[in-house]
Image 1 (cartoon, rainbow, N blue to C red):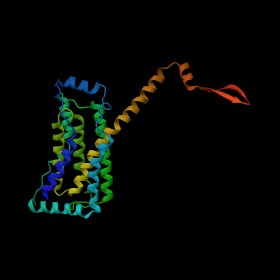
Image 2: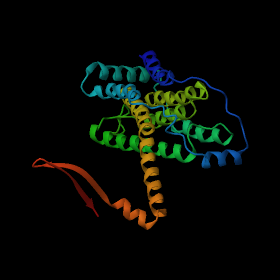
Image 3: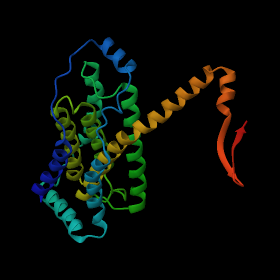
Image 4: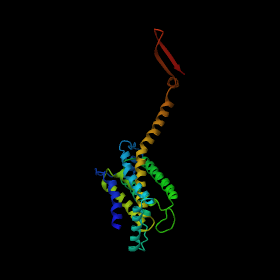
Length: 282
């Protein structure tokens, strides 16, 4: 059963990285130049958007698998079997590096940027995207935990499903993959490696069942992909509204009045006679 656990969790990371391809290594510059470019260069989220609607399907499948434990007995039996194997082989395992692993991919994205390895988006854009992803994942996780009321393997409480640590880790892994995956597939592999280790450790510490971790991974990936998919539309709407307001403020008063007027001229035909009909709205 432990072999199945390793294979499936590692497959999640492999599947997420399969679409990435290596590119040229970024040139390193000093920190001051890096911050200036990162904060002031125009964002390019829209031009290099990776998350398409079809990319939401694989993480949705992971969530569906994890959720099936509540009604599909083979999935529930696999959870129990994996937990029994761990209790038998590692009864005293209590190590929690996953408390730090879950945040490592995000820290690496911002840390690498300081040494000149730039992500796909500027600091402001990527930070908003990450906040959106974390917000969607966090709110959903909390709501589902309370609704499902599933007992943890160690029987400490009823907030087992889904795994929040794993969700955080895979939010960060997909975030790192989106921002740096085009530069080298190694960045994606590192991020998903930390996320996979987080999920495995949650199971080994008896904090979660296997299906909890699979659902958490799917929710984390789905939240990040959805944030990258939605953000360009939100940003374009905000920027367009700002530009329209700015243009309207600088517009001469007479032109503003003209823009508020509408008129129409239509041909008419009545009782065998042709004519024109004019209407204006002030």
